[in-house]
Image (cartoon, rainbow, N blue to C red; front, top):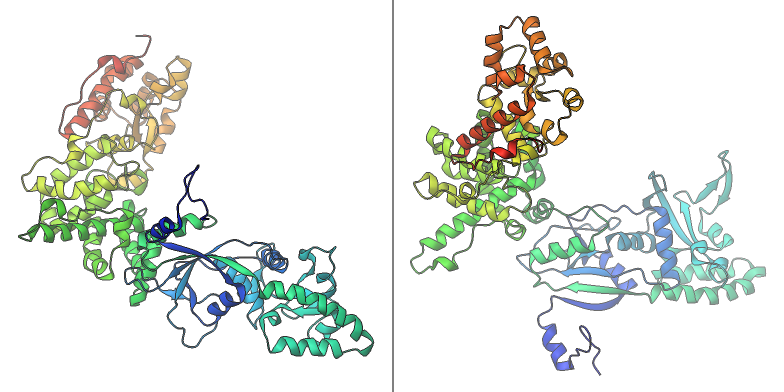
Length: 622
């Protein structure tokens, strides 16, 4: 009778199970530990190059060997059959395997690297195992079975797995030799069987013979011990490892997704690492190439946070756009059948080396053009960048436009699209679909088409201004930049906050009505901590303001900086501040008027009106 498959009382017949198996991408089986380790030794089973290095310590290895010694389960190993031309990863041998000419592997180890590496080095290698102690210090170890303890039914397996240093000698705390197992004769004298001999059908009998014949007075006792030990040895030799084998037809994105789900103990694998392994098959180091590009891009302070995934997504947008244009250009092509523009994970993983090499330089230039445009909008560093992610479609847009993207009219359109994304707060969360729409829609709009969805989707609620409390918000950072771009001047020096002043004088956001004054005068925190009550000024100017009432600190600033009241009013207006209400310490009037002025500034850059609700800028008591 077929085993039940599925939920509840749902059963499949044998023939139905056979049909189901036609659609599965994996097989479940068992393989002897001996055969599995032998396949690793000859290079038939290898690691994909994206697998991280071996990291298990001595304690973990001893525990694993103890589990094998008593036939306890140690988990399933997941392997991938090779041979799919669309799923090619550069392979590498497991640590400890030495081959002059490694063959192409028949399968790759997706899950079980730590266990298999530990078992191979401890059981199949003729070299000491390179591992770590509990403090993480590198050490080398040999592993043994303590014969007497191994056959004692009252002793746990953890106690008869013996770990010895590379010298096979143990010293006391004074450095004096305490035990010496450094020769085969001494191993046999103390009854320690080297574990690598367990699977060696030539050396094990020789060691056994010498062990039994070594001391005539102990021959009978040793013979009884060895008979019992044979059962432990057989547990190693007959141990069956559960195997899940992914068929070679499994697509790359599925392989990567499966790897990440089973690799819960490691860091999430990125598409960059996967492509690095894929491109390495063609002797191209994606990592080295990216390091050079990142160093070049980092000359622009706002690009210092750019990530490899951002870059690859921009390349994917351009590659898929080109394929779509080619498909649409075919006379028999139907629009709905043309490939979509996309930069989702599965599409990035499909990038070929030729795809990357064709577009990488253009994306690099596109990012540099993006940086120059944003600098013109007074966004100077990555810390003040509203959305790093919006650089992905912007760089692709500039890559397509090439030199045409330097034209003032086109830059103005791109800037408007950018600000709509910022103040519409449209680039948080999962945004790959928006990226895919941005590229063709912005390019079509530049050529006279309809406005892109990012502009149409931009809706700014007046009440949102009060909610902008910290620089974590994209709109908060956007307003910050606009105030500087449109001539905001420092209260003390009267200088416009340009690039040099920004970095030399440590410009940052500070409160206009100081927090201390607001708290003393019963102003709600949500209002006094809103961006409506904040401006970019220098740290030195902020220290002069302190916690004083505006009327007091304005007088002090005018006197200390030798600024006339009329000039100070001009400086205040450069920040959309109503001078009269500020000088009168009238927070509510100041708050309402500045809120309206900031909304007007946003309207100017997004190119569309914002619905007004005057009550939204007043306190609940008004």
